[in-house]
Each structure stands twice: as C-alpha cells, then as structure tokens.
Length: 158
Ligand code: CA2
Image (cartoon, rainbow, N blue to C red):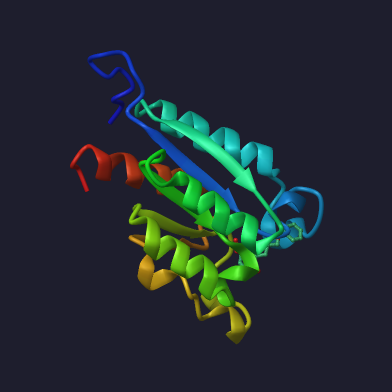
C-alpha cells in the first residue's frame, strides 16, 4: 500500500531510526557478516520507505549508551515510533530497556544478523519483551520491514 499523500498534505509523523555502537562501521568492515551497505544507505532506505507512507524519519547513531537513552527520551511527544538496533547494548542494557518502557512508543527491535544463530550471549535481549516487534536476520531489509510495520500500525492496519 502506498499512502504517501495525506489528505492535508502534511506528514503523518516521524519515526526515529536509532542505531547503537559500531553500526557506524557498516560497509567498511566485516562485510561477510554485516553486508556492504553503509549506515547512510540504511538511513536512506528507511527514509524512502517512510516517505511512501507519508512519514518522516529522524536518524541517530551513537556508540554511547547514555546518548541512546537521551535520544529515546527526546522521541517522546515527537516520534510516532522507534526502529532500534541497539547493537551490543541489546544484550546488556537495562538502561535502554527502561527508556523504551518509559516513553510508551511502539518500538521495533532490529538486528541485521540472526542473533539466534550466533554466540549464546547474543540470544538474550533486554529489549525484546518491551518491543512491539522483533526482526532479526533479514539484513538491512529489516529496517524497511520495521518502518512498514510502524506505518501499518499507525494507520490501523496492523
Ligand atoms: O545483527 C545486528 O544488527 C547486531 O545488533 C549487530 C551488533 C551485535 O553486537 C548484535 O549482537 C547484533 C554489532 C554491530 C557491529 O557492527 C559492525 C559493523 C561493521 C563492522 C564491524 C561491526
């Protein structure tokens, strides 16, 4: 479905695309694991997907846990949903979990790789049960699916 043209011509809202530690290295190292797309490519993919649904995106990446928590707080009252790849903090961060719980925004946890097919320490996520959906192993398409899902949720189709 393409619902890019809201009746009033305005945006239907903003989705926060939030990436955590080391994801700024995408496309420059370990392509066999994480592919060749860069973070800028992912952000463009998310932007194009959102635009097809009349939505905007705001993108932020940080290697710092507190900065990610701050970005989640700042999304409250501003964003309609969050696409979150918290990187390694997925497996360690109660602080990011608490921030997601606190803001009451539908959040989609995304992982480029299938974390369940990797080391045991990647099988547990502090974020999954406070997220609306979890997508892992679909490569960068996971970000597209996440935006599509949030768009559908926002228009009552999910
Ligand atoms: O699969 C994912 O998206 C992960 O969130 C990626 C994290 C990892 O700690 C999670 O378990 C799963 C690691 C991101 C590292 O990104 C790099 C990208 C290019 C080169 C090196 C690291």
